[in-house]
Image (tube, rainbow, N blue to C red):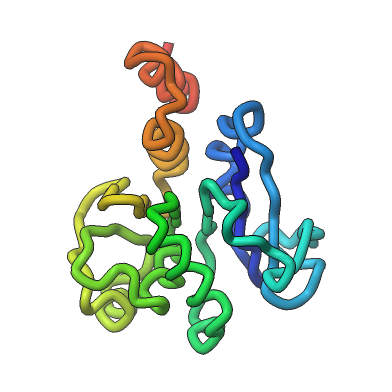
Length: 183
């Protein structure tokens, strides 16, 4: 299994850390960027991506994760939209948290779909006007998984569960309890 992660300027790294922690033993994790090989993240670290978008083989992607951040500047980037639409047409799981769902809206993938996000309501009304915004931490609609920015644990568990990687409900509950520090 191959998981790809879209890195973009000022992406919010900590929102996807728990999901990547879960996936690290079940999937090869590869990062890619749209422009520069080194990408600054929200935590002020510079991250070196494994590859550029132009080098990504969409047929090798089994899961795409999009962290939060501010995708607005990428609204006119057709190469991102083409990749997202191609994955969506194939039914490949696409998991986006906080601001990440904006990439999906830009590509027209969320039109008429249930979703959640981490944007303020005024901005969200403009970006997600054709979407069915839900007041939930995580929403799964078909192959699309969206989450609020503060729902790191819920996002990680939902992605892992959607992929069928938990052995049983008990393992799922134990993982959520671990993430939430519940004994």
